[in-house]
Image (cartoon, rainbow over all chains, first blue to last red; front, side, top):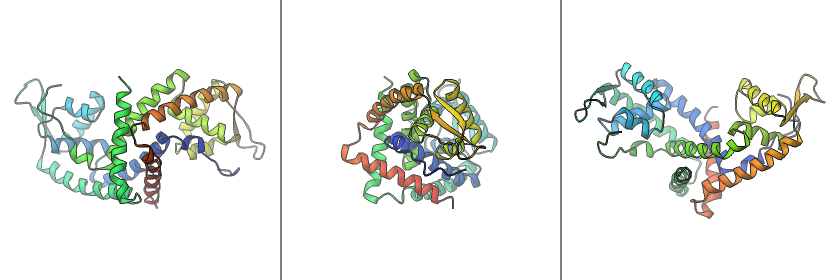
Length: 152
Length: 152
């Protein structure tokens, strides 16, 4: 790359959306490195976490919480099932539906991965003053809700 | 979707990374709707903004600032050039390199799109208390830097 003086992005930096994109990209790369030793990706980790927390969850519900297309969800569930981390069995309340449960192996891998993700997350936020950390999380949820309301 | 009680994501919500992903996804969908009338996407808008701010920018520099692969950058520049929004000419300082400049049409479209994006951005952050808005931006930059330092 040649140098023709410093490149500036002041116009884009005026937007919180640009700051968020850059922060999220950097964080996502770090999370990806954190999950690699467990053979997990952001989406397979999130799916595992939700099934641990909500035993018997249906694939359609998982897709809704993760806000992903049903087709993409199938790929994620197949992967976790083939690795023996979760099971898909007919639902006891609706025989047309499936219920997802983690296996002992899934529970054990999740516990380890979750600790590593907690350490990664603490590292990401470490530079933010402690008293501002809850406010940052509140602000992000507020933005999520503002953007969603906007669709209506 | 069947109901088997409320689905919770408390375990993931403990992480600032999850809050950020959800906020960014929602914001990105709103930004996409904002840019559609101008025939722009997040990446083509960002590229246009950077060329307006840094006339003569080289494609390799643009790829670096946008943190995208050179191959993806080519697609973006091709699209903007074909629409007559920017030009790619041999650099005056290095004949092997190219310099990017916006056309009058590009400048005019950018001005309109930038106003729309500013309105979208203000809408996204409107629910965050005014005195916390600069702190939110600082926190996001701090996270971006923490994640980058982590690579070393």
